[in-house]
Length: 224
Image (tube, rainbow, N blue to C red; front, side, top):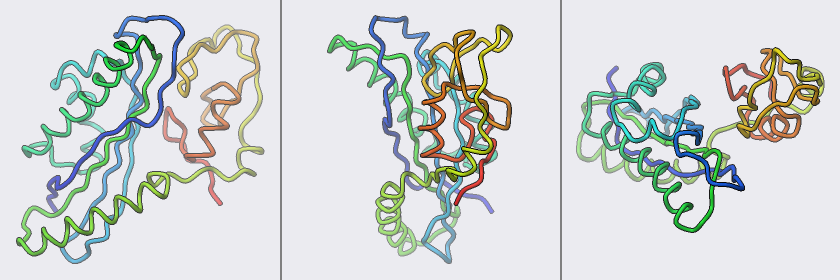
């Protein structure tokens, strides 16, 4: 079944501050795309989600942003040929770049931004009455979705305790924690998920309280 975008919105979720000015090209964007699907027979949407990480300078080009988003949106069955899709790209670009510009004007700097882009999709062929009912249902569903932490479910505490291991960062594992995007320093204690990805201890603990997916590979932890 073909779907079209009937509602979309992008918004800032979290800022990772930085003490000094850094080049815009070094600022990281962590974008979570939530897609709610609605059928003609049922106005209550069901949701799918994908998370992507990329540099802020990619938001300066709709073409480059599309290249990054397209594989994930294809998985989510988003209609990228519609006029509304162009609005999705512009909304994400304005949200990310606009936030950085406002912070810079106020003398503040950031290392990373976490953004959410919420899309709702409905069947291509719909009557006017169905679209009116859909608009009403979308407003109600969006409020409910936001009140329920944007559809994210935290991992079970027992699974975090039993499956996430404490390790020391070795020289070959040196890199950045993909939650805070700060360096994982050699010799420091870190947390390793079952998928083998390593994060700062406090960062991944906070992340797994909000979402049971790995922020890198979408490995799924058990939930309650």
